[in-house]
Length: 110
Length: 114
Image (cartoon, rainbow over all chains, first blue to last red; front, side):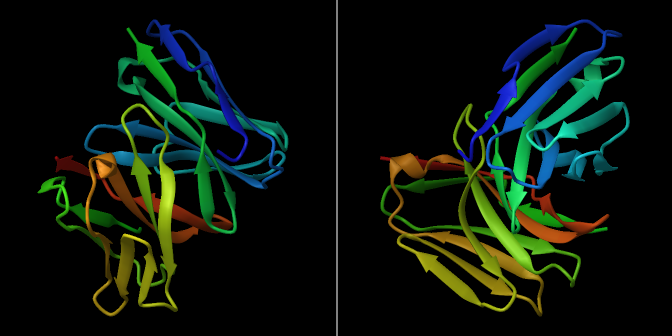
């Protein structure tokens, strides 16, 4: 499982509250990603990072921000959660095009 | 941008039969095509991949074929078993920002009945 962990694994929050999800990897991989998975949509890229402090937007980045202050940690923040952000969030790392996924975080926004 | 279409969305087969899942992509610059298997409540896991300089790749009961001219690739599972039941995702790489990133299909739910 490429040494990837995510925390928390489950979270229920209310609309309008800030939420931060954490991804931690032990493989020293340069690239890290955040995806969301929703029925009928597969996996959609939110943001990605190609190094410490180097991040960029994916295809569904509105309402999300990220930070990477260390190689091993990639944080995803929902500044003000909305019900449309209820989803399963997967972190992934990438070494030479092969992506390895974390166990996922199930987020429910009420 | 890149778009990946995957069919069928659901597939039911009898144990021992073959299963085929097909994907098409739009960006002719794509050069890497992985397949992921996701069991219920688990993370997606890579099961096989193919690069654009190869037309076919096999790994035991699983094979992937690529037709770059037609821009489609397929996953073939032979002698299916109940433990093959899962959701399968195809993906294609495309340039995004500084590097090649994956665009995923919407998934195929495979059910193998004993």
